[in-house]
Length: 296
Image (cartoon, rainbow, N blue to C red; front, side, top):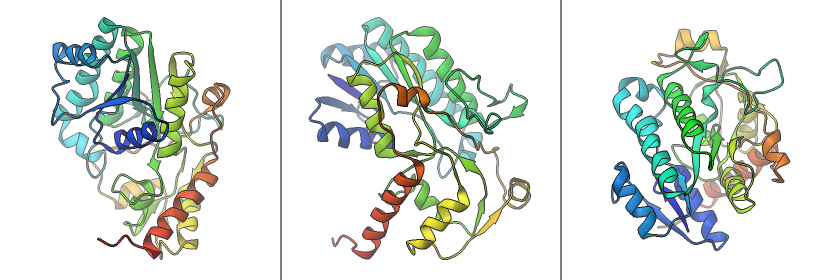
């Protein structure tokens, strides 16, 4: 039996949809209804519901962006570090496989054009040469906790999630709301592809460890903008450089822009779509929704 923590969130909801589609049994848990911040309570949940796998989608990402993490450091640390410590300990004590949703924001840059692999040390946190955000700090710490505490763990790195469903968390929705956009090259993760890849790892009992779960091929912000314009989902916006961005836009936290290598995932047997393919599919869905809105 699979358990999903943070089931009411953006990624948790996608796991639920995909597990239902694949006819896989699961239990869902949210902090509003379940006290999984407490070690004993979480172990009781695991034993009572007969869980053999725990997927951790819970966490603090900040709304509307990571600047909120700088203003609410205690809440961010509690959800992204201390909760992960509790979950990892519970899984180790109960001998349950853990799949933890992490982030690619612990890196910045393209690693000399190669992209960062799972073996590369994070380079975007408070102790790195290039200072990262507090959010990046917490995600780096969480990975370290899991790696040192429980060997039967998967760490799935998500990067800039998007799909064809309009949502404040959807990268494509966000792009439509700004007049100025930072021109940067990034790896991105289609939400559905990401979840399918995670389930692939679990079903096929892939080697435990870290996986960069991103669509194949990096993409520029301007390329995504052009696709949105072609679909009449965006009229106009101004692309600005990183230097201009920090001069013109008031931000509390530095932004991560990075490219991740997904070769390890591909070598596990998962057929990941390219970023271009996934984007075109998602934008087509968004366009259809706009042209044929659901009547209430």
